[in-house]
Image (cartoon, rainbow, N blue to C red; front, side):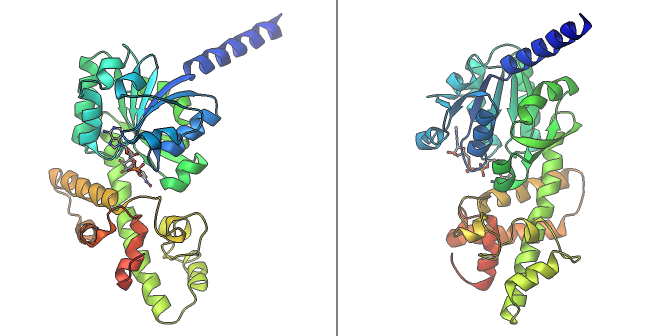
Length: 315
Ligand code: NAD
């Protein structure tokens, strides 16, 4: 009798969870969003997706393609956004056929884009005014983490909303950190990405020097990856072509984290740092390097292309 009751409770819990997770809206089917959406579908969610580029939305097998953000936000419990910047996220929320027009009362918007902390706070206030919930939930792990569903989430918002989001987030990622109130997830993300921008630039200049001086790139990689110079940039996302498979440097620097996006993040980090009087000398220097790369036509290439930029080459 006891066993039967426990079984029924567990079963009804699972059914409730599956029901809760069955309807998700997802807006922004780019390098990150399409992979996250694909993983969520594989794990059993039904997705309604929207992207301004229709072919991007259509690339996600098994998703229902919507014509507007409003449509993607209608009749779902959770709406994800994975968009280039805070201005685009705000527009997607507030436009005439935007999220606020479709989202139901009490539903949760999860913004995984990297945006200005101030924009995240504004989006949280807009949600409150319109009767739905919001968390800022930027991710780290890059396109390789998105493909492997190993992303790390950094969340700003209420504890309850983090718990509502948890089962959905675990379909596309692995680690969840509650950083504080609205905007706190974005601050954590900017702290991470300024290290990323600096270490990628350092890795690129180190490999450039070593290879020019005659070292075998693979031997140098093996040394660095067991030495103190090791980082995500050397180990998981090496900027030298053909060291690692399935990374942008081995694919003409396409399909990863675009130079224009790391430049955006470093600018946001500098602005956030000014507001708390925290000097960022290394960030400022590499920010300017990535800006110069944009002016050399590299804005849409993966940021590891800084390796070839320092060589004076084009991919
Ligand atoms: P992306 O440019 O590949 O994808 C953005 C998508 O949004 C594109 O498909 C674009 O068509 C779509 N879009 C643009 N404006 C839109 C609008 N108004 N309505 C609907 N769709 C719109 O960028 P990405 O690399 O997927 O990055 C997305 C976000 O994630 C950014 O904020 C970025 O900083 C962050 N991020 C990226 C990575 C990475 O490695 N690529 C890692 C962590 C975080």
